[in-house]
Length: 150
Image (cartoon, rainbow, N blue to C red):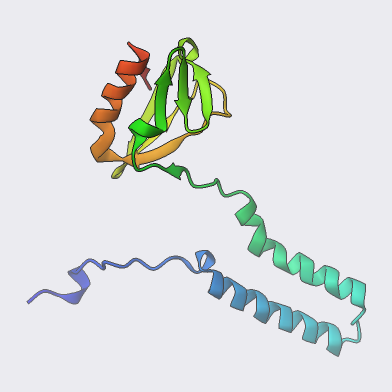
């Protein structure tokens, strides 16, 4: 018989600050306490009260401004990255093949992150499944010739 403390949990709980319902409940409770304080102390002026509620909400929405967007998940990277004469087409964006210096393929868990770090920042980066990595590398060599991976 195994001890319960040694069994790994399949579900890991998120910290409270990553759960929107809990954060909203905390904000609501703090707002009610703030409004009660302003009412009890006869300082219930509209402008200052609204400004105080706005200041009270900063810690809840400010971190979301600094989150990086999630990368685009592609099911078929060979169809997403195409080669046409002198151009490399990545989705709707394109770049001249001779300008492609290095290709970044970073493996994280079961996904591969693709980007062209030494070229324009306007070129899209994306993520695809690890199982497609070798086929995609062969596709890149076929279209770009000899390339350097970062």
